[in-house]
Image 1 (cartoon, rainbow, N blue to C red):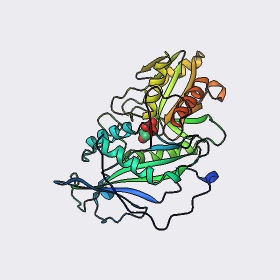
Image 2 (cartoon, rainbow, N blue to C red; image 1 turned 90 degrees about the vertical axis):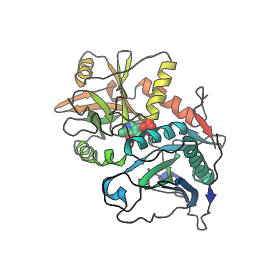
Image 3 (tube, rainbow, N blue to C red; image 1 turned 60 degrees about the vertical axis):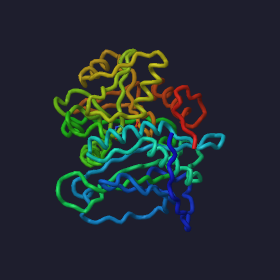
Image 4 (cartoon, protein in one colour; image 1 turned 45 degrees about the horizontal axis):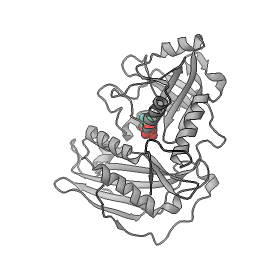
Length: 356
Ligand SMILES: *Cc1c(COP(=O)(O)O)cnc(C)c1O
């Protein structure tokens, strides 16, 4: 790997660390952030670590008007022996490049991205919390910063990484969720930006999330944008369905976000010799499987929760309870294995963990 030089301006007024028992998600931010600029003709330049502070942007900056932006999400974990570990940061860097390509954001070298993430975490090591389930959540993002109201790709960008100490997603262990099958609003359509990690996909999904909350559900199960018959994702996570001994998830055909947890789950299941299939899955096949007593487990995967088991699906006036609304054996096993690897408690046969 090439080496990169970043300047570091130390924060002279470090914050008092938040109460580790009351972190929650995305509420607290560390003392520093990473910044880097881009200009057409000059490329990416001036990678630097500076005190955490507000960004100063022209109100005409393109990101505010046409949403030319992208983001990523990954975590730094504290191992029992004190080491600071990242999980597959190269995958976030690769995904950034695919998102950038879709959004007309300039390409960004993978090694440079990983070096920037590592440099920030090295400065913020004290901010990686220790308690079980906690982590330092890292949010790299890129915004179009050129002040210009015309509709074309920006000639200036800002790459930023901020860090947020986060609490355990599961205060009382894995908890099955209630999911609303959304058949009115759609998240992504073929040819759209479904496979790119961009804020616009999230803004467009808030309405459905609000509807799901009103129905007493924690998230939505998205159906395909054309026929609304095939299952795609659960909220902002990938979705897995176990029917008999087959574990099924939607294929990466443009409308699905290529989750790193999804890829890790597929790799582990294949490694364990289980039957896994990436294929289109009809909602009706899920209901039929349930009626036949073959719908064994449903779970969502993502960086925030790793594995989130689904206990109940709500669709129109129908309610389907899965595995007695209890955590399935496979969900628990996947969670224990992946979280174990992330925190250095389990062997890492695939070389996923990167020490800082
Ligand atoms: C980020 C994200 C995921 C999960 O990806 P991970 O890399 O596993 O965190 C799934 N779906 C959507 C829509 C996402 O934005």
